[in-house]
Image (cartoon, rainbow, N blue to C red; front, top):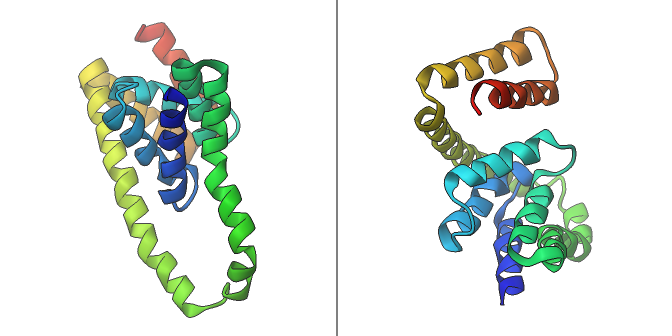
Length: 176
C-alpha cells in the first residue's frame, strides 16, 4: 500500500505541474506534508534545499529521498518512475499533436494564462519558507542570508550553486 501512496504522491504533481520541477514543488509539498504527513514543512524545506544543492532535476531527487525514507529501495524506484511517468506518457501520446499546433495562437494564449498561476504558487511557497526561516533562525540571520545571496548572484554574478553551497556552509558553522 505504501508503494501506491508513493506513486500517487509524485505522479499527481507530475501530471498537474505544468512548467517542470519548480511548478510541481508546491504540489509535491501538498502531497507529502499535508496529505500523507511524511514530512513536516521544515523537513520538506530541508529536503528541497538539499535537492537544490545537487545537480539534476529537483523533483526526481526529492522523489528518491522521500521514496527511500518511506518505502526503501522499492520506494525509490516507484517515486522516480512516478515523477517521470507523466512526462513520458504525455510525450509519447501527444508529440504529433503538439507539433501540429505549436504555432497556434490559442496554444500561445493558454501558456500566458498558466504562467501567473505558477508564479502565485511559487510566491506562496517562498513566503512559507521565509516565514519558517524567520521562526527557526530569526530575522537577522534570514535577512543576512537573503541579502548576501541576492548580492552574490545579482551584483557579483556568482553561480547559484556556489551561493547554495555557501549558505549550506554558513548554516553548518553558525546555525547548527
